[in-house]
Amino acid sequence: MFTVFRMLLMLIHLSCDLFAAFYNYCMILHRKCIDIWYNDNLRTETDMLTRVAKKMKNLPRHVVIIFGAKEDTICDCVRIIGWCITLGIPYISFFDISGFLVQNENLLKYELAKRRPDLVEHINWSKPNAGFTQNGITVSKLKTRISLLCPLDGKQEIVSLTKTLAEAVVTGTIKPEEINIDLLNEKLNSRRIPDPDMGVIYGRFCSTYGVLPWQTRITEFYTLPLHNTLSAKDFTYLLEKYSKCEQRYGK
Amino acid sequence: MSWIRDNALNWFQRLAIRILRTGHIPKHVAFIMDGNRRYASKTGIEKIEGHTKGFDKFAETLQWCTDLGIQEVTFYAFSIENFKRKQEEVNGLLNLAEQKFQRLLDEKDKIRKHGLCVRIIGNLSLLPQNIQELIAETMILTKEHNKGFLNIAFAYTSRDEITRAIKDVIEGVQNGDILSEDIDENLIFNCLYTNYSPNPDLLIRTSGEVRFSDFLMWQISNTCIYFTNVLWPEFNLWELLNAIFYYQRCYSDIQKVMKLQNVKQIMQNSRQSTYIDKLLHKRQITLERIYLSNI
Image (cartoon, rainbow over all chains, first blue to last red; front, side, top):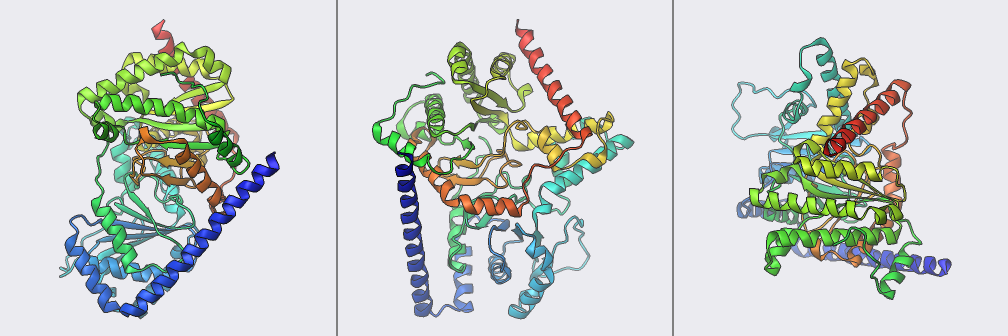
C-alpha cells in the first residue's frame, strides 16, 4: 500500500511541477509580448514610478532585498537602486546568503557607474558599524543609503555585541541589570538605519534566509518569482500591497 | 473543549494524510494563530468568543499534526505586545488561558497516554501568579513525555527571549563559568527558551499578514514560510496539507540553503556544555519553586 501511495504523491508533485513550468513559460511569453508592445524603456519606467509614488500614501522607508538563490544579482541590484531613488526611498539593503554582494561590492559600484552614471551622486554607501556622521555640507537632495549584508550581519552581530557587553560587565563599565531590549536595540543599530519596513524575498522558497533576526520582527515580507527578470511593474505591485497593509503592533 | 481531541476525519481526509505522509514530513511546525478578532467581527460574535473558537482550532490542529506524524509543534498564543490591548480583552484572554491550562491538568491521564510533553515558552514573570503556577505544574508534569512536543509561546517575544539569553550568557562570564571567547551562536541558541527544540522546518501564519511579529526570529533562518489568507478559526485540514505539500516541493532547495548556511551540530567545549546544564538546572529549580509555592 505504501508504494501505491508514494507513487501517487510523486505523481501529484510531478503534475504540479509541470503545471508550474507551463505557467512560468506562459508568463515569460506574456511579458515579452508586453515589452514589445509598449517598447518598455527607461523613460516610461521612470514616469510610471513617479506616478505610483504620488498615488501611494505609505511608502516604505527601508527596503531589504533578500537574494536566496541566484548568484548573478548585480544587474537586479542596479535596477532596484534606480527605482528606489526615483521613488525617494531613503534606505535600501541587499542581503544574500553566500556573501556574494559583500565580496563584489566594487563590481556593483562599477556596474552602477557604467549603467546609471546619473545615480551615483544620489547614493551614500554605508559601511557596516561605522557611525553615521553628519558632515557640514548641505546637499540639495537627500541621498539614498545602500547597505550590503551577508549572513554575518545577523546573528554574528549579536554574538559580537554579547562579547563586548560581557567584557564591559566584567570591567564594571556597565551593570548587568542595565542590559535590556532598548540598550541592545540601540547597540545593534549603530548604523542609525531604521529597521526594514519591507522585505522582498527573491528565492526558490519563501524564507527569511537568516536576514537580520533582530531588526526584521515587524518587516512585511513579500516574495517575487525567480523565473523572470524583475520589472518595475512587479516592484510597484509589491509597494502597493505594502501601502495597504496595516500594522497593529500587538494591539 | 478538550486539549486532546478524538479523531473526526472522514475517509477522504485520512487517505490524503496517508498519501502525503509517504513524502517528507516536517519534524517541527510553528503556527502564528492570527485572525480570531477579525473572525469575531466578521461573524458578529464577541471578541472573546473568537478567541475561544481560536483555541478549539488549535486543539484540532494539534490532532491533525499528530495524524500527520509531526513530532513537534509551536503555537504563538500570546505576545508580550498583546498586553497593550484593552484591559478588558487582556483579562478575557488571561481568564481563557487559565481555564484551558486548568483543563489540561484535569486531562493529565489523557496527556500521559499520548506521551505529550508541553512546554510554555515566554517571560512567565509577566503573568499573574495563578497562571504561572498552572504553567509550572504542566511543564513539570509532562517533562518526561517524549512522543510529541507541544510548545506554547505565551507572554513571548523574540527580542525578549534573545535579551534574556544574552543576559544569561553574560552572567556566565561574570561568574567565571565561561570565558568571553566561548560566546558563539550556538551558546546563545542554547540559552533561548527553545533550547530543547530543533528549529522549525515550516512556519504557518494565517489571516493574510506577511510579517513575523517577533516570533522565533532567531530560530527561523532557514524555515520554509507559508502565509495563508484564511483567518485562524477558519483554518482547516486542507490548508495544513497544502502547507506541507509546499514544504515538500521546496524540500531539496531548503536542504541546499542549509548546506550553504553551513548548518551543522557544532561541537561544544566542556565549559559551554557545563554552563548550559547549570543554566537549565537553574531554570528547572525556578519552575519547581513556582509550583511548590502553590502547595
